[in-house]
Every structure is written in structure tokens, then in C-alpha cells.
Image (tube, rainbow, N blue to C red):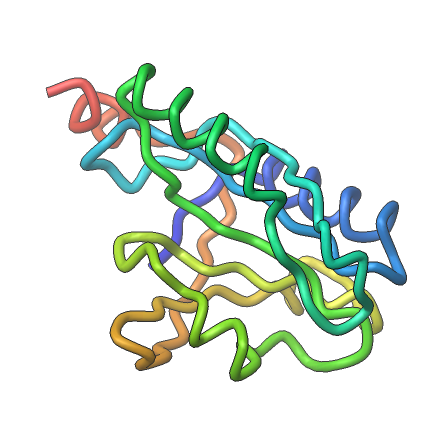
Length: 147
């Protein structure tokens, strides 16, 4: 299950609506070894496509280096679908290279928080997971992240 702060969900939705009809994309970083999404990093979709997204390789390299320096990793990798349901496309599945990450898809055609979906994609196997939207993270989660 993905537990995520409502402000992060709202930020992803806002970005998706702002970028529509182009697919939006980005990551939410958190402490390495945790499942706590904290820092939203919008990414540029260099494909500029309504049906496909691709991170800018230069930006991605800089972001991954920054995460490494901050002892972070991508907890959430997100993008929008502008004309289809929130389910990973064949390309989404083939390009999923972070097995620990939650892959979140925001559908901009029927958009509300309940339509945002999250998946784990490992070795091209897709497993949908529940999203728990919270107003604050539980202290025990934060303590686990520090330990």
C-alpha cells in the first residue's frame, strides 16, 4: 500500500492538469530504504506527447545524483494518462526500472483523487495497490525512517 500525504496527491493532480494534454511526469523522493514520500520533483516530459512520457535524461541524471547526495531514493514515480484509464501501458511496464518504487498514474479525463491509481511493477509484472491518503504521517513512520 502507498501511504501519501494529501498535499502530494494534490500537487501531482495540479501538475497533470497544468500540463494537459501533454502527459506530465515526475518523482517523489524520500529517505533511502523507506516508503515515505516527502519531496515532489516535477520532471520534464521531453517526449511532449499525449500518449507517452520520457524523463529528460540530463534532468534525470541531476535529480538522481541529488537524491544520492541526500540519501534519498524515488519512492513514487508518477505520470498522467490524458486519454486513457489509469493503468500502465506496455511502454510504462517496459520502462519501469525502479522495483522499490510506487508507480502512480493520474488520469486527466476523469480526474478526482479516487481515480489516481498506484502500481508496483517488478520484472514487468504489474500489481495494483491501494493508496492511503493522509493529512499527516504517523510519528512511528517517521521514526522508522530515521532509524
